[in-house]
Image (spheres, rainbow, N blue to C red):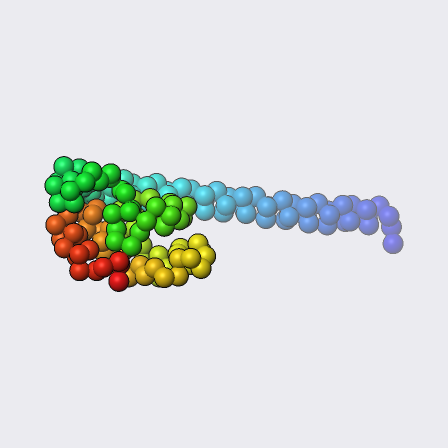
Length: 160
């Protein structure tokens, strides 16, 4: 066979193959650009929905009334002082603070099982404590229901 015919045919096949591969990569890039624009519009829509829901959300913050707490308990109460919860002392409060539970609200949203896990992490000296009522007491303190909290604590006798 003649080399003058084979060389142009081989070059033509190679160029056709390279053209095909180049065309495929350009098509992929176009598809990726379409995907990116679809995802960007979806993100913009979700951000818009989030902004709308934040404006519609009516969050009421509950203000701490130190005078009302003092009138009921007969002593000065500091806001988010976990030691007013029957069964929680300074060491247990410190243990809860180490686990990022630093407010009455945070404790009120905590499950009894999580409270027990936190106590267990402190070692055997905390085994005698029973946190069954702590979240509910914290909820009362957070909502400023001082009379109800004091009445309940007088019935509890040590957090039981």
